[in-house]
Length: 133
Length: 133
DNA sequence: CCTCTGGTTCGACGGATGTCGAGACAGGGA
DNA sequence: TCCCTGTCTCGACATCCGTCGAACCAGAGG
Image (cartoon, rainbow over all chains, first blue to last red; front, side, top):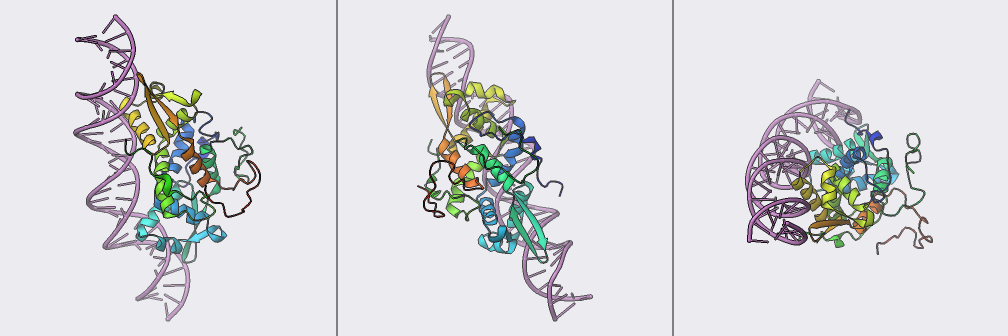
């Protein structure tokens, strides 16, 4: 529980990679998220979760989509959870996963090659992104 | 040398993660790039390369920016190279690195949360059938 | 109560990864 | 020529990662 969602407060800057050098703190805060995406299974899991109808999906619908055992899928889901990319909630018998678009948007903004004025930032997110020019 | 630039032809689709499920081939092709970004040192190296003045930077300017030995920096640069994120060229005594914006843009598009319609140029005519050229 | 199903945690295994020192290679200059 | 600087390769080491089987926990019904 305590490892859920690494402190993204260190990633104050969200200017694109290609514009100015990313600070050490930002790199340290965002690299785990990229590492979590660095596995084909997790990439597909996140996609299935994020594109699910209704915004959420049950683990029972994720597991049969891969040639992997239950514990392995559960491990990958925990990695995504601890990276802050998804969130889980148990309702009755089943556990439902949903995506966290805030971090996803921040990663996309970091990799953007063109400035793309009016960045698609997390509108309902915490506080104001004052640091983002 | 033969490992330079993994076949990105498998990543035919470039629709955002959140729109539809990422195919297995796309996930397998793009996951190594995310894995390469999953290290704070490599994230800073790529940023220094991509944001360098003139579009390229010498290894001799990268190495002193970290508390790491030469071989370690060289290793990280090779990972970025083999992921197709950067390119290297030797000119005289020094080796110069430059970014490859194509793959970077594809990764950013995959993580985009909003379609960003109309952000650049006229509206896309075909609505949801956004096929990658 | 017991049992069944869904999901997670634990422990273990093989393979990959990050880091270093030592050495090799490339190019420029004395 | 020899040497010096810059960069990469090699070998080694400790650690981390992906995967599995077995066991464990949480709810829903009997």
